[in-house]
View 1 (cartoon, rainbow, N blue to C red):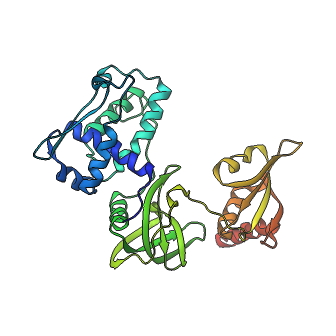
View 2: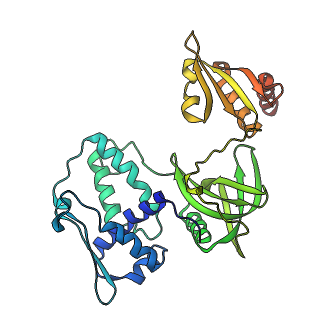
Length: 321
């Protein structure tokens, strides 16, 4: 069984509760099967819901979870949920953006109470279809739901998958045998963290760059260590090359978009930032994109980094010719 992070569990609880509220009296076994958890896990999640409320935490101020003698579960919301909720436009947009990812949780009804509430909120903010000035689409990545379900199923069952993957950093396609450990969202994209046989170590893959998945009927060769749930999507090594760029003010977005080390501002208002380079093709694309607004001032472990942009641009021009 793969380790479930606190964030994963909270996302699951937030999806389960509105579904039970909209569908009272469903058997515990059916609810657990719908959301891809065991009955014990579902009961543990509902045990957390018991403690949701407001001071002084009297019965009328707590969420009430009831399971009858026949194992049917009903959730009655506390009185404060019936009060009109008044949000500023900024609060509404933040709520819409943070809640949209819940619709990707397995078992969530795409036409259920949560989806309808988000749709109404989007219309009220003028962001959804049918609202005034429909111009903003809030979504979490472009990963296919089928791929997410396959990865979650394999992670839960402790099985491996074979996947065809496009590596943006290296601009290459490969077929890999991977033992998925967890599926998570970060910075607007879905990722799968697990053990990759081809790399001989743990790796993190973006789900929207997986072209296909085939389930393998064999148990995972490696399991995650304790504390893996705190890991992010980028883990530099001491041996990785480093490149220091001097950026014009209009290129300062690099510092916000990529992990940087030793960020400083020069006397003339430029920014000097050191980036860890795990794949040269990625750096080539970045330098071509930045053009004259970035200068390589120092590099470690990457010879001729200062001439990399020129060579890459020449190679691209040769292709066009």
